[in-house]
Length: 311
Ligand code: ACO
Image 1: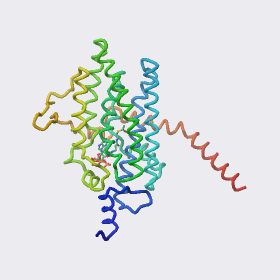
Image 2: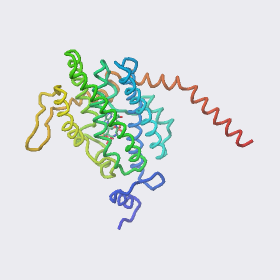
Image 3: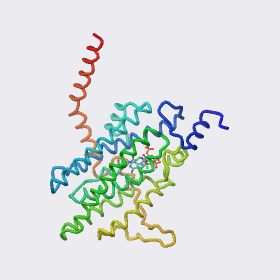
Image 4: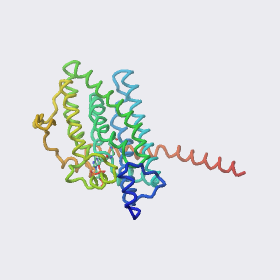
């Protein structure tokens, strides 16, 4: 029978009990969750920018409505996730401060530019497709508030993925120029999408402990392989070519083998030196500064209400 608090905690995790905010938890578990959940929240918020870039240029009213809804969903996911991080004792002000100062990480993928309308299709199909592959298992994460947040987020992500694939389908059945545009977007988004899953298992600093705590249910490489296996047939259906000369189906394992990922590019992007890192942070800082009056007004209102209640 487990004796110390750590052993009792691990026994609860092993028994698939959910850990709730007021429960005892190891400091490392709390820190890991604050790190992962806040990085995830920042990714949703920064993730609004590449697509927001195309709202005014969506080709039809229907496409514009869907894109607006999707970008709005991402804002909601970010706020929802900041709340989940707050249940662990993190302060939202500190988390946002770390994003704006460049200290906090957010997903590498959002540092790439959206050059054509086909990029909106490729992001929905590949980036949201990768996000779903990674996030469906998080619905079974041991920490209750994160797991429950993920259920709703994954439902919305699956709508995002389908709207993206439908854009790709329309383009790849369109004119030659549209097909070329779709292929070019796949060429540019394929490898960065594979990098979204994080470093290889051998290089992943946190995986082993996060798997023991059942924060992560599958390793980075396992999820990356699942993504490749699910996505290659979708590319074939579109009549597009995955930009990987080493890609081949392995009959023996039932999986696709794929070429080597350029991890030096991944490291550059993580260090802040990707194609759009500076632009993204500038946009967030400007949004924060432009919103100062809203925060001040809300605080003034709260103070007045409190004073009235006490009078
Ligand atoms: N972009 C930026 N940083 C990354 C990425 C990435 N694609 N992948 C890994 N990293 C960072 C980790 O955050 C970690 O940095 P840190 O120690 O400074 O915090 C470091 O690289 C080492 O990686 P791992 O040990 O593998 O880290 P971890 O166990 O946290 O696994 C993963 C990374 C898979 C991204 C995990 O954090 C996760 O599942 N997060 C939740 C999902 C998420 O954040 N998705 C965001 C993109 S999807 C979207 O927002 C639509």
